[in-house]
Image (cartoon, rainbow, N blue to C red):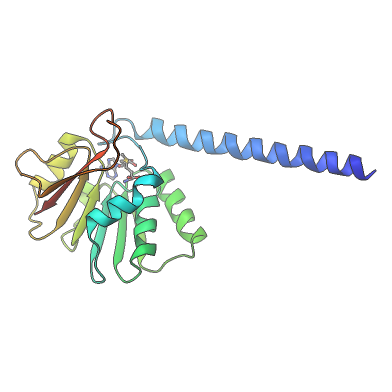
Length: 190
Ligand SMILES: C[S@@+](CC[C@H](N)C(=O)[O-])C[C@H]1O[C@@H](n2cnc3c(N)ncnc32)[C@H](O)[C@@H]1O
């Protein structure tokens, strides 16, 4: 009898795992499909790069940090744990990703210094930002930052540089060569 129970539990657990994996797969590829045609597709930053990106942002206690196109909010949540006295705002246009980011936030202790806004970043006034991270396509990143006065802001643009500015630093995330310079961070003091 005990063997039968154990067998049934094992089947139940494996079915749940399969369902969870299928769900994660569907969410990942649905969001990817939905984000094509936006100013950048959803390509989340791998956790192995979090520490280096957070270091590049040089976040201090009184900073206001924006991730423009924050995806599922993973990087912002990591940075907020690292510097709990700074403020972190993630802007994301895809509703599904914002819901995912807010769920992640709840599941990681609901830090009060993090918020996610479901908006198009071209419609957002982020002049309060002191640090900005973006992982967007070249034309988007250039359109986004060339139109605004962001004097003094530290900008970290992953993969693509600004056309009309020289970076203060180019940081390599990995020794591997990425497909579109994805392993490079361009740092600017605007
Ligand atoms: C390459 S992903 C980067 C995600 C996240 N920053 C990370 O590093 O894990 C780019 C994100 O920008 C979002 N995005 C693209 N255009 C946008 C827009 N106009 N307003 C807000 N978010 C946008 C996409 O939906 C996608 O999630």
